[in-house]
Image 1 (spheres, rainbow, N blue to C red):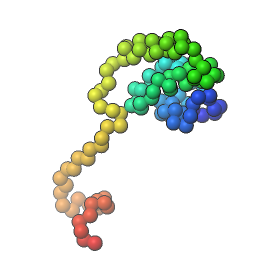
Image 2: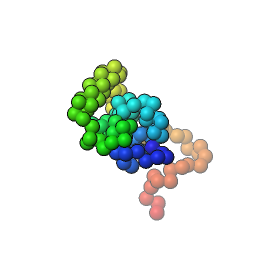
Image 3: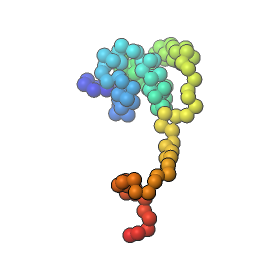
Image 4: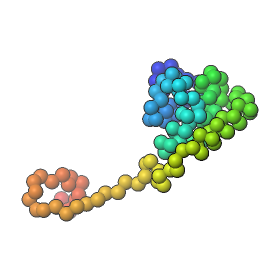
Length: 122
C-alpha cells in the first residue's frame, strides 16, 4: 500500500497487497476485505485470518481486535463462500522450486557465459 498509512497494515501485509495489485486505500475499498484476502492467498502467500480481520479493521478505521465476533463470523462465512467458487490450486506453490535444464551445445558456438561453472583451472 502506498500513500496514507492504513491502520492494522504493517510492512509485510502492505507488501503482499502491493504484489496483488492493491496499492491504495481506494483499491482496497473497491474490492473489500474478503476479496483482498483471497487475492493474497491465491498469490501463494500464507496469511492467517488475522489479515482478513486487519483488512476489515483498516476499512472501518478500527483496531482489528475491536471487530465484533458477529462481524468476524460474517467475514469468515463470506470468505468460505468466495473460496468455494474458486478453481482448485494448481498443485504447487507459486514460488515452487526452481529447476535448471542444461542442453548440449556445439563446440565453438561463440562466447560462453559459464562464469560460475568452475572447471578447476584456477
